[in-house]
Structures are given as C-alpha cells and as structure tokens.
Image (spheres, helix red, strand yellow):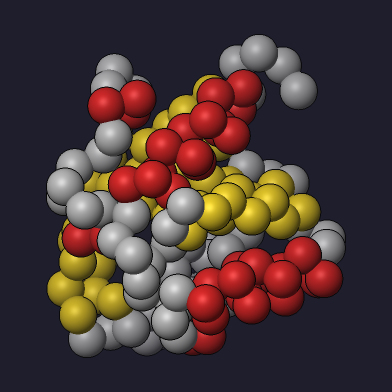
Length: 137
C-alpha cells in the first residue's frame, strides 16, 4: 500500500467511556452523524479517516477507550478490518470467514448481540443492522 492509503474508523460516541475520541485522534478528519442502533436506539457515529500505517495503534487506543461491554469500534479499508473491543483488537481479512467467526466469538464475550456483528456485510454496507439499509449506503 502507498503511504497515503487510509482506513475509515467507525466509532459510536456513546461507546467511549469519556464520550470523546482518544487524544491520539486529534487532527484527523471526523464526520459525525446520527444513527438508530438496530432501528431503535439513537446514537452518534463518528467516522474518522486515518492513515493505514497508524491503524493498528489507533485501534488499540480505541480498545482502551471503550465501555467494558456491549460495544466495539472498527477500522476498515477495501481488504481488512480491525475490530476494537474493550482491551482487545481482532484483525479480519475480507475473504477470511474463519476470522469473521472468530471476531464474532470475541464480541460475544462482551455481550455484543450477533445482529450487531455482521462483519462480512460491512464492506458493502456501513450499518447492516439498520432497517431498510441499502447496500453501499
């Protein structure tokens, strides 16, 4: 990958213990928007564009900033996803179903509902758990 390659971090503001991105994210482009989690719970999504070479360190920063259960954050590009759980990061390749199942089993340790861990669909749809979600939206 080139040095200007990026990943997109997707973080629920309410998942963060301080309700703010960790200081390591300062200066990075952030886009915020409202979303209904499972079509029922209003939340705020922060999307952050990050350099791919900083992705592992920033995923660990997120893992240290998450509430202890029910939430994760993820960083994604065309080929891989880094899923930050509390104190844990799992790497998933786009074409690796075993890694996806492993990530889902790790998420279950933090009481994350399976409907919120549809990782295989996240390369095409940001929020596959949303009702009436259009592919690629």
